[in-house]
Image (cartoon, rainbow, N blue to C red; front, side, top):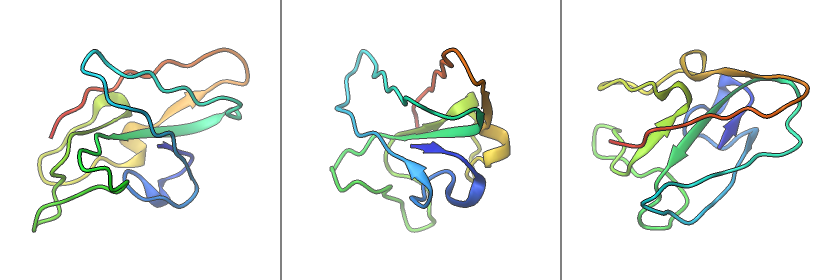
Length: 102
């Protein structure tokens, strides 16, 4: 999911551009095209059960692997948009590598 602001980051769906891709142990490449220059953050979820939503345990922690841009991980709270944000320039390509985990 490509987030243009903090309102739905990291696992909401308002104002977000989604790409659903099949998992691959070797890695997955996801391309967002025609992205205007600006500040963004990416959130990734390995949707094991295919329900297209993040599953959590009784205290709200994810039960499926996830990751965000800048590879921010906290043990007791989700990363913020400001921690995960990056800039997209008007021209060129931006590559963001994300490590998955729980």
